[in-house]
Length: 200
Image (tube, rainbow, N blue to C red):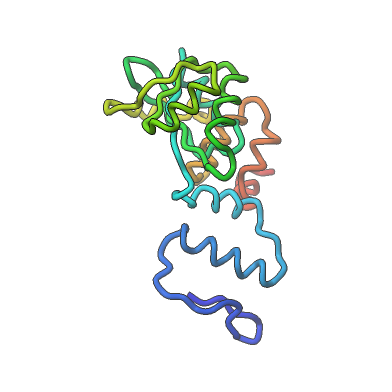
């Protein structure tokens, strides 16, 4: 793949076998930086979403995973939420970006929004940290997690005009968090082209 200027010279060295967004986004960022152009917000969000090596997960148990997905999805640094079942409870599996929010901060914010009473973590070091820094019960995440049916996913987003857009998982998560309570904030997570499709 090549990025060339108006004189058909390479802006950055050519590189082949760029087949995924995870490999493409950093190259686009280098090109824009070299051209002294800021990375658009939609690309910044896509960058966070595709940096999977910096993602971790925590599973939160609560009385209603629809509320949990909405509230936990509103936290900055949360990339994705998924309604599910674990330990005979409704849970939300949260994927977060470790450079945007660390586990301690995520737990503190989850405590503050009061939508969960237990967090399940697979890593023993994370469990130890959680026990020393959170009011939530901390339990071991073992096998047995089950994703909830499709009709239980992203319930706040369902039935809205936003649901008809072609959304990334992070966009879906953030829109699910804000679409019913703050449409202005929800609109910050979609592209200009998507806004046009909405008639904005």
